Image 1 (cartoon, rainbow over the protein chains, first blue to last red):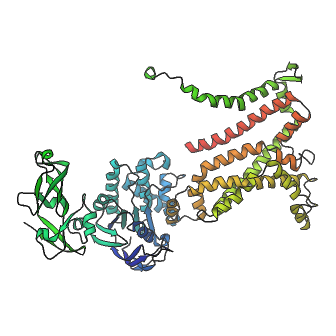
Image 2 (cartoon, each protein chain N blue to C red):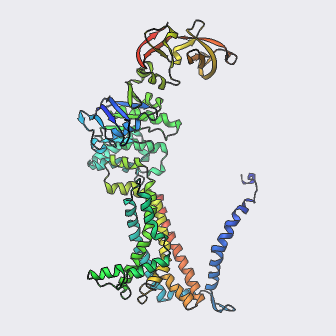
Image 3 (cartoon, helix red, strand yellow):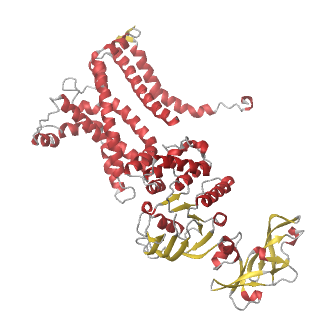
Length: 343
Length: 289
């Protein structure tokens, strides 16, 4: 396993005028499950290829356990990768697939057998050992691909490139649980690249949010959600993301804008904001009452509030309501400058 | 359940054109040949039913057996050369280069040349007196004359077929190679696979489909080869390069032995069918385990 350290990494594709990544810093601890979350075009794939050794940084350095590996190949760095769709050797059966990277690393036969058995127990693949990949379901195949990535005991870093894309939604959570458990058991350093915030927030110890070629924030999922360092993070994480209103609207003079999550606000007779109810979306119930999202059109733009829905919701659409913001995060020039409690 | 299925036989009308085309292009001519093969035809109005006599005669004819063995040897030889060579050529073609289309066009050129022209090209090219190849080999001190030496005739015939058809295998294999997603190579590299393993475990399994097609096409085509050897050697020297179709043409056209030639044709057809079936079922059977 390795601690991964990216120091002022920059990357420009040959012939491109603008850098895809610039001045990127990131530290991932040994044995950490780390998620890289970003929208398409944020540079996720480029960063992934830099880590896996397909690309080499134009500027900066990449360290594994303090050793500069920037110019080494992925093989020399001892990186393993799980791809968006299962990548297996189709002519080999499951146990041969798992043993393949071990054989090539020159492990003794007994060590290989023990390791394959161990990985199979971890991933509960015991029944499938003699099967060829084509006999497996997509889920099982991806599980074997994960096993193959984890097979070498000396692997320094396991990269996961949106590994749940091909798996059907119903069993996504199952594979995610398995991944999380195996990561904890084996204490491997994992970097999970995804555009799906649910996957990132539920999988990782820490999450990095990537936008426009740089990392905006690296924190635990909790902190990323509660205290975004950048307006984009507040907007990108959460469904829906944060509401943003001008700071004056909430009588704050020390910042430009206030961001607040839908659940940090409620309908009230003494609210700071008022607007017309546009539409509602039921998400479930609270204390026997339907609850969900209410979208209001205010003087400061659209505001979404989460909570109990008014009794006769249909009749209220189009009517004037007041929103009380309970707490918010203050931003100036898109950067966080503090937080406010309004009650 | 079946009683609930709506009865609609109009769908058969949609199949009718195919049935008609196949009937006229394959079934009816084939049945005509089968009909001839059990008759002794003196002229078109004087025929005798002779049963399986022509089949017996053909299968016991030493010239048929020789031509058949030559044919098997020829097909196996060109398959063992063309399939690996085609894969090797395909692996050498750059996949995303501006040169790729040009390379593919140049590679496809032998396939566009009419077969009798291919024969003529090689007939002249290999001539020891004026042909570039023949003269060059002789100039190197090796006596080479395909018109008099059976072995030289064989080598020339095989070279011609390799030149003519390896492109087809290469193009098919290239199409197969381009359809392999990049992550398969990346994963193999991270797993420490060497070049041989990359070929054996990543590329070859994914080329299976196109290679089955390539082998079947080459097997059938080479078994039926006629024009090129006819132009190149005419089956000689002696009968050294007389393959099955050449022998058949001599019987049917040259000697007008319609009955025996028809029996020969049916046997010939069944052999091709048998070889393709043997090959295909052995490959598919391996697929199932």
